[in-house]
Image: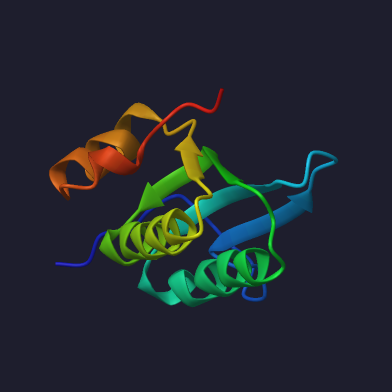
Length: 117
């Protein structure tokens, strides 16, 4: 049985929007919007890896506009967290909706969720 949803999306519109901004304090802010599934994970990984390679201090990932984060997205965050941790830097993942946070908890990735100071 096929399920029909009322959500429409233009063919050229990405499922997950990734906006990266370098801050004056040397950190980077990343805003994710939409759905972070396996198809979008490569774009998010590339954005985070680019910020890490540029040597930004910490990276803050705002999930407040994210409707879904699958296992592939959680893996991307875990990889970035560990890469930054080795360099004594930090990845902050915050702003998750209740549904997205529940997905992190069910995926044993709740440890990634935090609030920046």
